[in-house]
Length: 462
Image (cartoon, rainbow, N blue to C red; front, side, top):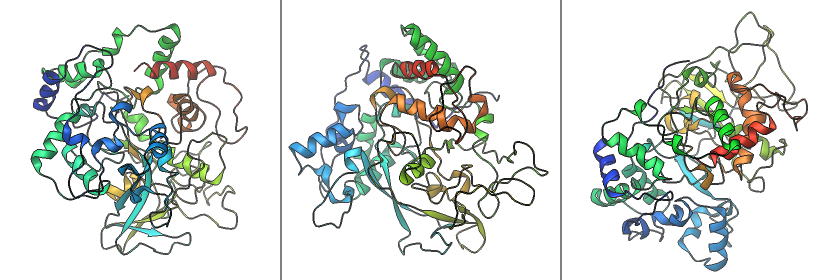
């Protein structure tokens, strides 16, 4: 296992010093005075302010309960702008996606990408824009993490604020001073005093890898203690470090990046091994990862998963993409997801060497509901890859994943155990597992029933 790496470009120490001196409550649940520019809409917008979607009373995120309550009591609230309606062009607007905590995010495809149909024909719109449905991340602990947004498209909090004003509030450019005021406030928001203590130590000059184990002061129940042991084994490799968002096991991270052939299918070792061995394409500078949550949403859209999805009742877009060598779009690198035989897409296929014919998710996939980081970088190895969020305060920010498919932490842990850890054999723990709800489809559970319960209990205390 490699040595721990510093996961993020942390905010400058001078900024963290501001945080440390301007927000020093000793309560477990910090209180903050909300910056007026965060609460009030700018002129020339649709009426939305930062606090419209990052609700202070709900840990600075957007909860389905808040949306439902507001829709019932004040349907004219700026939250219900047409841009986040299920169909913005409908005569009567509906907000089923928003009621799941989802907002519409428009992305401009990089120059070396095209949108393609199921037959491989290029269908990129003239403005090169696509949209995806995503949850609203909490602002808590943002002083400790960068870049921002689930795909990392904003480098700083100032850029994130302007991007939100432009895209979600439909406003124009605001002054540098105003953006700095919003960002400075956001850096005072912490999920707990433990998170604030991390910022204090960094501000005082403590090296990132030497920051105190602030969770050591927690008084844990026996269940939570066992859960912490599970956390260290299966979560900390990617959610490690002082910010609980740092990849510290690059060997495990590399397992998520199989090398791809020009058709988008995985390159395996030849001669074929039993089981087949994918050739890996390590991404040492890449801090994003395809854990499989977008694939799970594809299965949800087909009704082909036994897991209960919080967003199963709303539709997501269905996309395929072509990646090229450069913006001339003449030399194809890969199509993702790779093409499947439309007459029988889910039949197992093998090549002449006896290796599987399969895309990077190792499962037949007709489309993706969200290309993730790839829509920012144009890198096919970023396909369906997303930011690794901090796990501090995660018990207060349901629902989960970039697409809100899991309603509870128990659902998240169950999904990891049953589907997602299978991509990373070192994360499969010993112990007698409960019967797998999907029978012979896919690998067995990675965690025991007790391990899952213990882990969820500890996560709620972070």
